[in-house]
Image 1 (tube, helix red, strand yellow):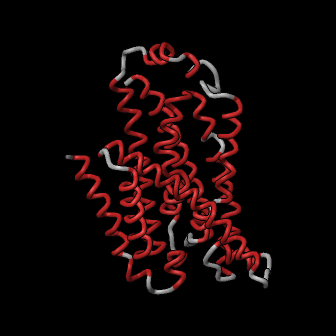
Image 2 (image 1 turned 180 degrees about the horizontal axis):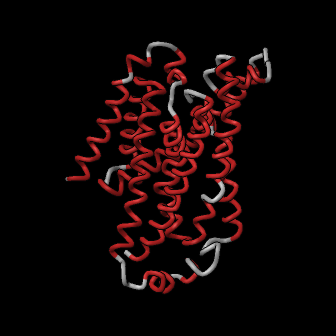
Image 3 (image 1 turned 30 degrees about the vertical axis):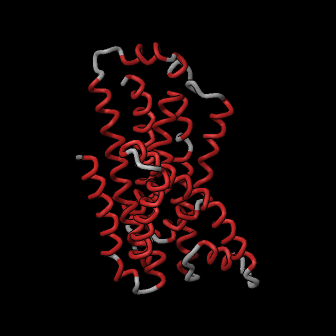
Length: 291
């Protein structure tokens, strides 16, 4: 019952944020699509993290820690550094140029930056975004479906519809500012949960030979740097880090920052969030072997 009430309150809060910002979102195109380029460094840092990681971290990384142990850390060791550089260097340049050219979207930027007058580049970019983001959104909806199915025994189709409807409501009514604030809140929830969970698991297993018990379950989880994962899998996970450079929803976060001079703070905050959450997810999954 507590879980149901909590979930209902959470959903209502997300919709409420969209309604709260609805009037402001209707003020201008820049406000609707980029929040008036007024996002502070803290919101940018946390929202960028939760947007980029999402179900991949809160479900996928915990599961990876459970399956591969020490090998799971390879999934996260590089992306924190690549995103730090992306925001602190490339993000600044993107913010300066898009503001100067009054670009609101990534296709706008490409067209302006490469001075394409034919609209062919814009059309190509839009088609690529649509195709790949159908896959990406499908993955996120699958994550929420797993949660609803596990907690409430909900049919997958019903879980997908519920998730999609909630996101559409706050996105369409509140615009970009609502998206950023919901992402910020979700990022804080992810941070808190991935700090509390491993600590709780450690406390409840104190004095019980944690390392020996994990080794008894599967020695490969801890006895080498790649854990129970194969080298090919490790290579694939390391390369995931470069995916952030092509994710439009993350690049848009850079475009919406209030000041270029604040982006170093946002970059450091984002890196710190990434490291803490990644470590928490890996340890939560590994320690879950003891439960």
